[in-house]
Image 1 (tube, rainbow, N blue to C red):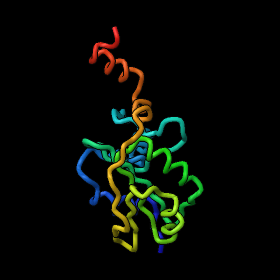
Image 2 (image 1 turned 120 degrees about the vertical axis):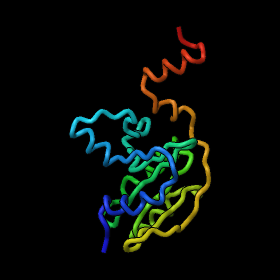
Image 3 (image 1 turned 45 degrees about the horizontal axis):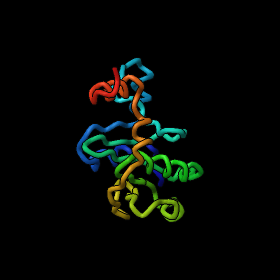
Length: 155
């Protein structure tokens, strides 16, 4: 029996490293009831890719969730977008997508497989060097100005 995306997120949550957890579904829900969010949305630069779950700590870790009900049609674009900005990336998937999805992933990505009500580690990834330009594009204009001012580059 395949799980829904929220069910997979519930299994994933206790396994996440410590840090600020930004869950795209929670952002949507909060926005719909008018809660102001300071974390923003983790949209990837120059793409329509949005991370499912992000852990913000000393490093950025992006998680892409593919339930058995999901399509893999966007996965190659998602892999490119995540790889540009995250230090660590993890695909969380059900067995249905494992073989085909793994073939699209760089070797440094981690893969977690959801089986029933458990998640097992299929592959442990490594830290990756994101693209500095892509990271800069995650900032809002006011945040960029503040950084420039802090380093004496903006009057």
